[in-house]
Length: 346
Image (cartoon, rainbow, N blue to C red; front, side, top):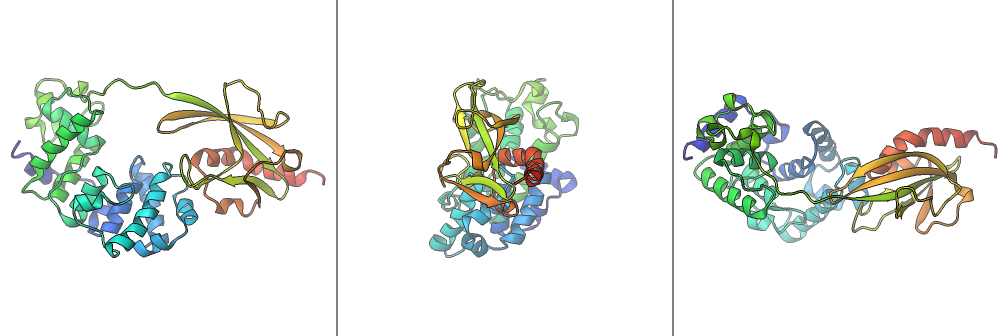
């Protein structure tokens, strides 16, 4: 495998993807790009990155902004802990590191929300440290290169693959090597129908030689996901809507939502507002469970008091940051609801 890194970097120069964040050594921009693009389609992530940099062009701008403003800029991306961690880490960089990004992986790991992948990405792409990054695409490439049937979702497998990559990158351009490995995984060594004939690593790949590429990588047994049931209420008048802010910690931390309650079974009647009008159903996927929800509507003057809820005008509602599930409800039901309520006789 000694020539592997050279093959990867040479291939990148010929066929690598042209990503806007690859043209900078600014650790702030690299950090934002890596965090925003986690679990996000590239097309979506690029648009968010551009808007985020316009709104928070510097570390100081991000650290000095209210958290609500950061969450609003993040609205629709999901996994909102990423936005909260960015905000906290920006303040941490100012207070503990004098506003400068540390260059070592060990110091970068001290930042709020920065894990091994992000720390290594910043160290490599901003500071040219000879460390390798390991994301899902690279895990697949390494698994096939080694012909390894070790489950890639086990920590021991990740540690083994990381050690291999760190050894391969030594003495080479880590930026080019890491970008090349990620691009090979994203464009050639894909989950199904890998393009082995055009892969620069074909001659070194054990899975290719043994006809195993379509069987690798292997994942461990998946745990069954829990399904939870919720009712969401659009409580309205001709002037606005009732909303509430979630606590800073936990699910949807710091975001706004419409009043809701969890129910025990799928068919249970809405406990809080049995007279509410049914609008529709939906589903939202979280990291550890799936949410099946029903949406109900009722005039705000016909409901009991809802702890923590606030009434805001239709004009002000768009200024708050809502999770994607609530935004989907708004897209489907809010406009006709607002129009109908305005036409109701007073």
